[in-house]
Length: 211
Image (cartoon, rainbow, N blue to C red; front, side, top):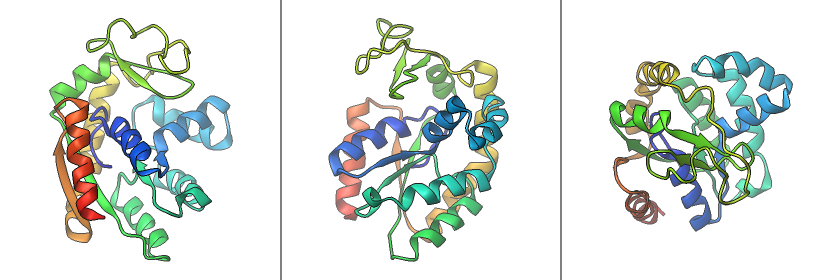
């Protein structure tokens, strides 16, 4: 899954994971957990994440390689937030080429103005990772998660200044990945400025055609 911060990749990846019965692997969630637990990886990644910049490739590559080696990935998996750079894509391709795993790249497209509004109003469950939006669902924002009943928090990287920096980093560093995948593997784009269920139907139709 490709797309800028706040495009809805995580939401769609979770829906796909439930429908296809394959794991949803979010590198952002893994890194935030490492930060919370103050593991060696978390400590190294903390400064980058709080500044809204990308964690170096070698840190992310290592954690993804370990995750993909687990048994639950044998039938497939959904990557959310990885790869973000061409070197990461090359590392992933090297991992997958060993067993002939194919890659389908789905890019969720949303304008920057919409993204800034979404992210600055976003609240996250620190336990299960589910997200809520203060504009779309004000009764839940700043309240409790409707799944695990944990108090919601607003992440440090969801303020306007950091959001702008994250989008700049995305446009400069990550978008060239689109051209890479357009030439290397199956690549499709979906409009992410629509209701969640409409986006999900579009994505599942694409996946069904690919499979």
